[in-house]
Amino acid sequence: MGIREFPGSAPRAKSIAVGMRRSPDVSPRRLSDISPQLRQLKYLVVDEAIKEDLKWSRSVEDLTSGPVGLTSIEERILRITGYYGYQPWATSYKREERPREPPGPAEAQAQAGTEAGGRTSRQRWTCSQELLRKVFWGVAVVFCVCASWAGSTQLARLTFKTFDAPFTLTWFATNWNFLFFPLYYAGHVCKSTEKQSVKQRYRECCRFFGDNGLTLKVFFTKAAPFGVLWTLTNYLYLHAIKKINATDVSVLFCCNKAFVFLLSWIVLRDRFMGVRIVAAILAIAGIVMMTYADGFHSHSVIGIALVVGSASMSALYKVLFKLLLGSAKFGEAALFLSILGVFNILFITCIPVILYFTRVEYWNSFDDIPWGNLCGFSILLLTFNIVLNFGIAVTYPTLMSLGIVLSVPVNAVVDHYTSQIVFNGVRVIAIIIIGLGFLLLLLPEEWDVWLIKLLTRLKVRKKEETTESSGDLGTGPQSRSRRARPSFAR
Image 1 (cartoon, rainbow, N blue to C red):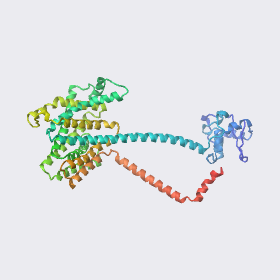
Image 2 (image 1 turned 120 degrees about the vertical axis):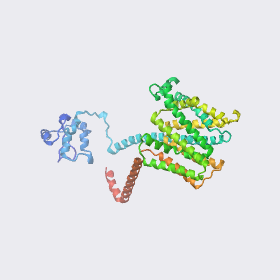
Image 3 (image 1 turned 45 degrees about the vertical axis):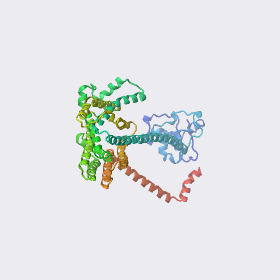
Image 4 (image 1 turned 90 degrees about the vertical axis):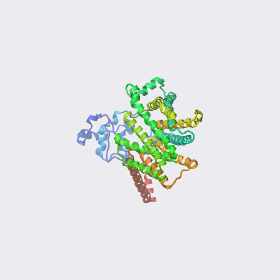
């Protein structure tokens, strides 16, 4: 047994009892519990052999740690004798396994800060890379959506100059939906690690329709209604292009977002949001102002009614899909759109034939059909639907919706140089109001909570900056030198 005396502590002799093993279960809580050990402390003698072993003891470090050490004799004694269940004498320390000079508090903090800073910097670098990747793909998706939607609108308008058959054009373009599932499967083969055959992938995607898969009953009850809505949406949109300019058609079609919200609120019982009600009111006001811009002529009123009907059919399609089928994965959505193409080929083909023989949509010979415009329009519309349905895999849905809004100024520029459109004050205000309503509908449901959090953070940061600036102004050279004295004294 032995004890080590610390320099300068002769008036307050300290001792360490080596060999008194105590379990944490019986660790003392009061001085009266260790009175026998306290009486034995004054008879202990320093053992030179264990001085070095006790030098790096945690209890000794706690006693000699300066301003961070224990503050009372009672706490020191309880710490030495096993208080808090800590027993430094239960562990044997070897000189060759420990460093000669342990790192000081400043060095330890510096090392910890370096490690934490490294981890934080790596995390920030990974997050920034992920964010940059999503933003890059978001810009690409926005460009594709804007270019394909504006291009298809302008190309359809150009087609009607020589081929006045909007329903035939709708039927021809919808047939291309058959390519959705083959294109999806090609992407699956290229990227997926576990490659499946076409039959296996088809059966797995068919589970979207139920346990029995795609039966004849499911085809007519769940696919056929959406095929009809798809055809009506595109036909009304294309027929409106014959009546009014492409800019008005594209901006009025943006109202479908407001119609989706109203139908979801009524049918799906979605959450009520005041800002979206305001957006719906703005959309309706924009429709009225757009009609007023042309002086309520019958030609423009019919065109505006056709676009509003197209936007309504699009909203009904989306709400019924969510109500009857729910949400679909990429493969399931591709299969569903391909089924719509099959339905169009099997059951809608008779309508263009009837329109041809009744001379409603008539052409003299097949050589007069502008096949280049028809194929170009179909490819652009197919690209638009592919990006709109599968772009969520690489970027945010909000960015994809922005492409539809950005197609409005693109169509306006093209119409300005290719048609006789007049951008009077009422039309410009109507475009701005409808665009503003569309942007308000893109706000997330928790936008008010995020806004409150952002304002709170800004206020806290402003207060911290004010406090730091006031502290820097109040700190003079004397106070700085006064702080620096302890470090120089060491």
